[in-house]
Length: 229
Figure 1: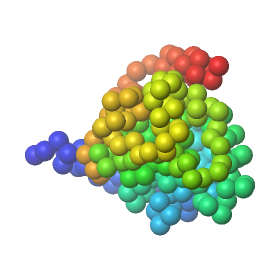
Figure 2: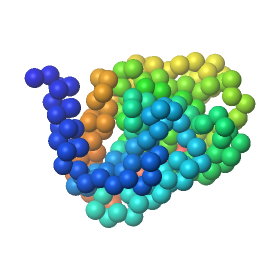
Figure 3: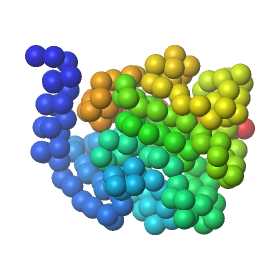
Figure 4: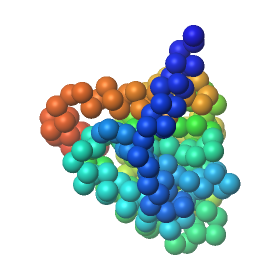
């Protein structure tokens, strides 16, 4: 039996045995033992963000932070794409709300399971997470055709991850960053087969949850402070 099949079977067991609740049609959360899953639930729009989704995402993250029985979260997108950016009709309203979200950092570890597109705001959302499990078909990019500027904190996170030269390359050209390059330059922590990113992220979350969480979160806070300076 292949590793991919085993991972998918593990994830199917996870899904079958989980306790689920829906916060809003645009965001779903589920929990199994001490792992929380948060999913963007707008698959017909490739999980693009709007004001309503951002508010509900913040609510879902806050609920995870306040749940003392949950130690690690996994963030992913339904339907094969992580997040294709911001709704075009909300570009005048959502960016400020999104920037406020990006200025914060989750009080506990959160892993991005990235499939399909992670464009613009979706790219920022990947960088906001602690770790990124990226599928082979995933594509990260900044669309230079848009007139909106990115958040300063996203620039800092990208710069700290890949360095000055690569940041300028990604920023100025707007070219696609494929999974292999994402791994080679430090954007991706793991590259996995298509369809397995959530299962792999869940397994990583269980491994992280085995360690003393107070020391992990204290160390995370130090790193976040350094990146924000």
